[in-house]
Each structure stands twice: as C-alpha cells, then as structure tokens.
Amino acid sequence: MYKDKKVVFSGIQPSGQLTIGNYLGALKNFKEFSEEYRCYYCVVDEHAITVRQNPAELRRRTYETLALYIAAGLDPEKNVLFVQSHVPGHAELGWILDCYTMFGELSRMTQFKDKSRKNADNINAGLFTYPALMAADILLYQTEMVPVGHDQKQHLELARDVAERFNQIYGDTFIVPEPFINKTPAARIMSLAEPTKKMSKSDENENATVRILDERDVIIKKFKRAVTDSETEICAREGKDGIINLMSIYGAFTGKTFEEIEREFAGRGYGDFKLAVGEACADALAPVQAEFKRLMQDKKYLEEIMLKGAMEAHHDSLRTMSKVRRKIGFTEKPRF
Image 1: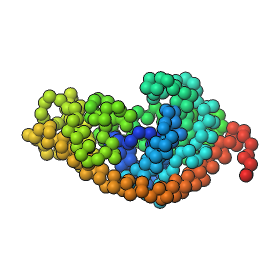
Image 2: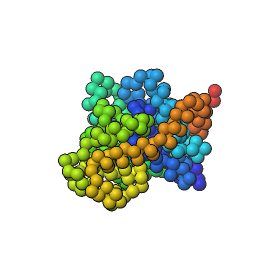
Image 3: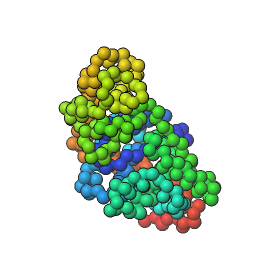
Image 4: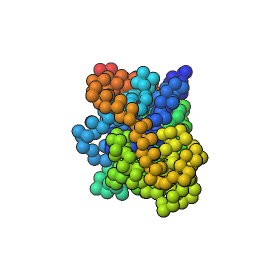
C-alpha cells in the first residue's frame, strides 16, 4: 500500500492494566519499526468485548492504552495510532473473513479453549470467531510483518491460512503476513509468583504482576516478594526459573547480559538482587509514567490523535475493502 515502506500492524486490548511484559515484549520495541516501516498500532476495543466489560472502564482504558503507546515512545507523526472501532473496515472485513474461516480451524484455537474455561458463563460467538477479526485487522492494511509473542503465533498462522485461501479463490488480494518474533529473554516475562507461567494482566494475584503504572514503592515491594528458590547464587541454570526471570527483567531494563549480571552480583544475596531489579524497573518506568500522566490530563489532544489516526487508517483501508467487495460480488457502495 505504501510503495516506499513495508507495513507493520499490532494491537493491544484496552482490558486490564498493561504489565512490564507488555512493555518489554512489545511497546518498548515498537518505536524501532517507525523509521523503516509504515506502522499501524491499534487499540483493539472490539476484541475486548468478547468478555464483559464495564463501559466506563473500557472507555477510560481506551484512552489510557493510546496514551501509553505515546508515552512509550511512539510518535503520532511517524505511526498511525488509532482505535479499532473507529475504522469500520475492521468489522466489515471481519464478517467477510468469518465466511472464509473454517469452523474446525476456530475450534482448535488454544486461546478460545482457555477463555472458555475462564468465562464459562459467557462463551459467546464473538469469543469463538474473534481470530477472524484479528485476521481482518492484519489483512486490512496489506500488512507484511506482525510482531507476535509465542502465544499469538497460532492466530497469525490462521490469518496467513485465510489470506492464502481467499487468494486461491479470487486471485491475488491480500499480502500474506510474516511474523516478527522477538527472541530476546525480554520477549517472555514470567509471573513473579509462578515463574513457569507468563506474566498476565488478568492474574488475580497482585504480587504476580508488575504493571507499567504501578507506583515505585509498589514495584519494589513486588520484586522483593518474587518467588525464587532455596539457593543463593544468582546465575542462569536449570531449576532456577525465578532467578532467570529476574535476570531477564534486569537485563531488559539495564542492557546487561546474563554473564554481566552474574559477575555484578557474584557473592551477593537474593535480597540485594531483587532490590536492584525493582529499582531498575522503577527507574526505567518513571519517565513513561510521567509522560502518561501528562497525556491523560490532555484528553483533547488524545482525541485529536484518535481522529487523525482513524482518518489515516480508514483512508488506507478503503483500497483493500474496495478490492475485496468487488471480488466477492458486492455492488459498489453508494455515496451518502
């Protein structure tokens, strides 16, 4: 769509408070794509409603997620920052792709199984079909690269399958996207309470998760309580999942390798190390938090960014939607 730049797309749900896992694995790295790629970063509020949301909280968190995008370093002049529900092409293409996504494919999605267990009283059709909407999010902008974590790879594979199926039926329509998988230790930050489980913003155990907007003393207290092991040596070896997780976090915030961390803390105890990790985390997040607070006090500015991003994204989506509608046999839309 942009001849001089390849396209990157990513989205974050405005549900729950984002964690340092979201920051280190995604947000912190997004700005690195801005110079080389045409980047679309979306607040995916339509995905959020597959689980019941408090309307006022959803609206607030939509603003907060957009503000965090900017506070984390995404320049609205170099990236398209927008809200999913503000661009009608997402829902329209989502429905069309529902009709090209197989029931068996959706039933095999592991996140559907997980969310069904957690929301047994609300296993709705959207929860089942939202991978088709996710495919629409990506394919709508002729995306060439999608930054994904290991837990999202299955969704991107489905998007690729749907794109290839549609192209086989109707000819070349969609670019088939490739994954960008961050392979650094920071790409997979684990729970502080259960270091074999990924840190999650929906974890009910407050001590398991460090949130981007946690206050400094809260951050340090959570790291002091982090689960480790009965040994005392700070090193990366089998059986030391808690320490390896803390080393990954410390390394991500300081730029130090595991070898450098081991030398720095040789002969020192877990207490010293946990405090150092907490302080490094709090120090790194302080400017992000300050900019976030400033942005949240300027709602008008955030709404201007929403409008600008929605206009750009909508304009860019029309080319794909016109092609798709024509190929499947829809008549041309009347102009109102």
